[in-house]
Length: 197
Image (cartoon, rainbow, N blue to C red):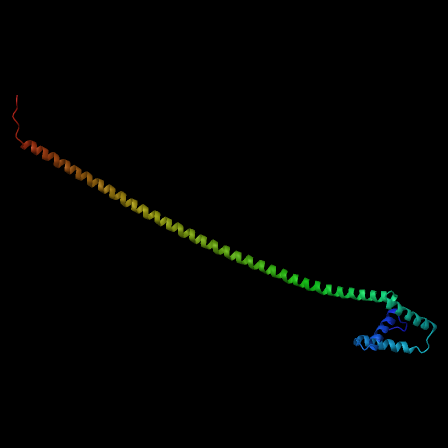
């Protein structure tokens, strides 16, 4: 801390002393700063003319500060605004860092999920193709067996039909021969009727 005090330092010291006089507790950092400030202020035993003028200015600034229109008020407001800006910048940096980490984790999760989904789809497709080929082969075998059974049944029916037709023809020839023989025998055996005439 330099021996020359700024108006903001003097204003801060005044506020801290006023707080102590009124019985308020101050922060340990503020207490340490006030002790250093007081020690340095007391170190210069001979007040210079500038110091006297500074004291007068100090009182004038405090009077202006009391009404809210002093340079110290503007400096304090500027200091507060800078500190608030730094705090907000720090918070934004921390927040953006956390958001970036979360986005990176989410991005990696999406990539892993996409790879897992691709593997699952490939396995499902392979399984579907395998089942399809097996089903088509089995269906073809069943179709061939049904065609063979129907062909065998058709062949049996054709053979039976041909066998029945030959047997029927033989039976009809036999029946015709028997009918002709019976008519011949009846004609031979029958008496001839007298001729009228």
